[in-house]
Length: 256
Ligand code: DAK
Image (cartoon, rainbow, N blue to C red):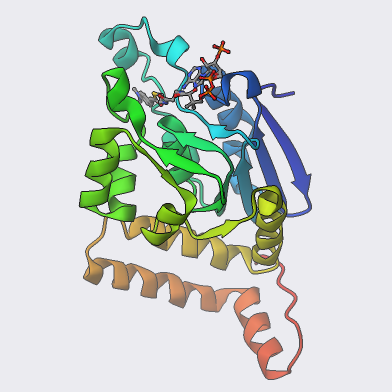
């Protein structure tokens, strides 16, 4: 049984709650190990359609665990490939939604950005305060945040270490929607439930194509998208979805 995360399965939806409340869900090696063991391995599960990642009302995650990292040398960090396996979580093809209440700072903000998109409670606070500790973001903050909100604002966040609230995060494209704090997780699960009714091959292709857009030119991306689109015409779910529309009924997707 994992200790630093709590997992709840609702049919095709998995809710992950970060569970180190005393440390404001600071991310340590154990959290990563348990995510790799209990979550990343589910990417191949055809019955899993959507993941919700959340924390508690005070913190989504206040960063990587400063106490764990503090005394390490550069050699230890590099040779231990400290935290580099978080990319295995980021690269999962099952859609992942971060539901952020409270602090999402440093590695916590980076973890939220590894998800496919972010929903937030109205009191959520995002930031990359590593500069205040004499370091920089280490699991994608300078890269993902810059792609999401643009260079000027990303520079401002990283160089000053300030926090931004949910409204500002919504306005600059860091997050997709805001809900009242107490209703956030329930709404996230409702959204996951809607997503989980769709065809899994199409869901994973959307996720995959949008991930790829980070690294492809527009021309390459259009070509890639088109090839995925064509390939769906060999699936049961494409025939079912289109026939159901014509027959004016609800489709029954089976993930093939
Ligand atoms: N690590 C460890 N413990 C933390 C923590 C963190 N990031 N954040 C909070 N805590 C602990 C506090 O030490 C305190 O523990 P006790 O003193 O009770 O033992 C407890 O959680 C409650 O925190 P506070 O007493 O500070 O609570 P407040 O409400 O007063 O303040 C706060 C909340 C979120 C403003 C404050 O806790 C805070 O500023 N926390 C640190 C935020 C931060 O600096 N985050 C960035 C961490 S650095 C890498 C990959 C990634 C990274 C690095 C390398 N590689 C691939 C190499 C990432 C780096 C980071 O994220």
